[in-house]
Length: 535
Image (cartoon, rainbow, N blue to C red):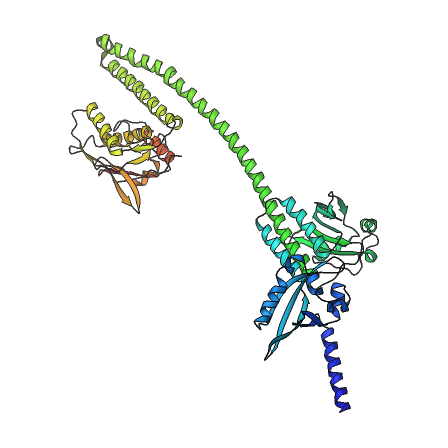
């Protein structure tokens, strides 16, 4: 019997040693008195209170964090009354003033009379909670815009996490041999930024290795680092800041005058901070570059606008000069030529009259060219306003004007009424005046001349058109249609200066639309156009 007891005691001793070697702290509590009857010896190292103190009445509740004291004991008691095993997290105040997070796994022991004992295991989850808080903080900083504040917060949080006195975030200078800090935490407040040389420092090793560095004793290993010696640094944690393109940006460092506690999370936490800070620095660089580019672009736009304003002013001056200074001599040439023909026809003879007639035609043609050029220039200068306009009504008015100018012509005009469009009314009058005027002109030799204006749907887009059965043109020359001074017929065949369609193209551009033509020689032509928004 004695041998059996000895074996049992041995088993209990082995079990006790096994439990005490783990991070789990076993405990047992009597529900009738709500006092601990057993607590593992590891509790002294965790919270700093004597183990015997835990057996005192209300010790557990009294040393709980005030916030958790209001709910945790009640939660545990109600779960026990329902015979529910449970687990929960709460904070305990240690003897040295620290606040630790405890995770408790509770088993309810019952008999026929009901629950009578609680037993379980406590675990210190403070480090896990710190990591959770860090992750939440880093997640919240995902949309941060104040980079300076973000970096300062990171420096403070790094020091807090490691219980360290110093933390800083540094940026590599162009020389790659020096570092300039962006945020510094020293003691209990932020400190001024500074610069230092990398040679002989643990920071250089971090950057050379491109990985986190946690030396056993920074003070001994880096005794030639004047800054560490001056600050009395004993422990050092460092991590490189690396861009998404694997470019070294800088470094973050955590230091203390005493050894910092090493945990499984020491290195990963550094890596998380380094990654998030690197992302923020890249975002800041990209934002600054974009801001600089925008400023440069705005300056270029301003300069270009000034140039365009000056060019428009010069164009207005030129238009005024053309309108007044060139018209006067042209009118004189045309007028005096007409007088010579009327008063001296007999003396000049037939050949002289023919020459004077050609002079008049040239002067009149030059006057028409001046009118067209002025219209082209005015298209750019006009102040454009959008309004609801009926293109069918405009087309009807323009055809009536053409009929008045040539009452002897018999032209069938089909006006297929289109829906209202938003456009600049004055520019549309010029546009339709050119297109319908061309249709009127190029059907001149057709005994059954016909012109049609209407709209149609093409691929879900509203397309307007002007169609005629006139002389048409060869489509291989269609690319010349909308260029200034380009003509597909001679002046002897049909009058014109090759400016009208260039004006039409400019008006279409102002309306963000498109224009194109389909034709066949001798079979007429159709001009299609769309209207977008006014530019």
